[in-house]
Image (cartoon, rainbow, N blue to C red; front, side):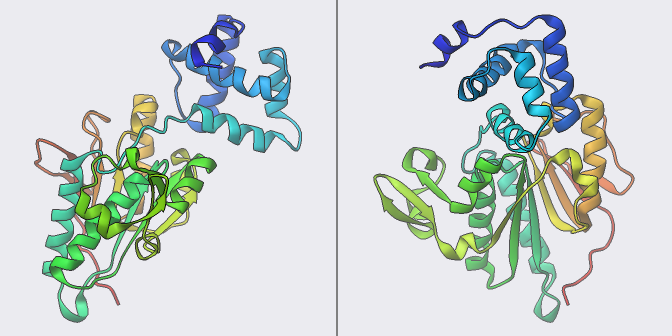
Length: 292
């Protein structure tokens, strides 16, 4: 059944009911769902209601809030409501900024003081962003010599993370990956599917988590925090609060890269904005420590 037909067969939702769902989603995920996206919500709800043979939104609301099944069902719904709009090298200017930053760091730190580089991809979805960063740093290794790096990806969606960990993508998903890079970084699986090579997958770690809960995450710190096309789903005030929590995980001397226009009139006492007309990025003014 196509989406248009499903939507026509979906019962309408009055304003009060929509506001209840809107409040629940914002309370649990931080994501604000505007009235313009009401049809998106109805389609996701109707898909789950058909699976569970439930007839109305109130019954489903009760189902998702109570009982041993509630946690699993909530994860299913969140996955339907999560926009998995990502691709390899989606923001080339930002990727180039990361490459340039890492090169400068590595050229500054030599010999026994060579720095380990760690990155955090916030809202990594199905992993294309994480692997784009891994491929970028792998190419930099070929240029500058061996150094350690790792990229952690986090996302709220369990199914998206499962795809990311597997690292298997159809050829049409490899738009943005050159033929040479595909040959160097992927192995063919048949039927036009390709898997990221094990050596590159070993550079990654994927964890489930809501960016809303950044303040309660383990106190790991990163050289680079890459957070693009994530904050747009939150209200402006919440964006600023979340950013303050996110950058608490940034190492002194590190860099946070955001999506252009995702946050306005935000500043942080420990950060300096980079002068770059293509990217929105900030560096931590503290001095970094060398790897032991």
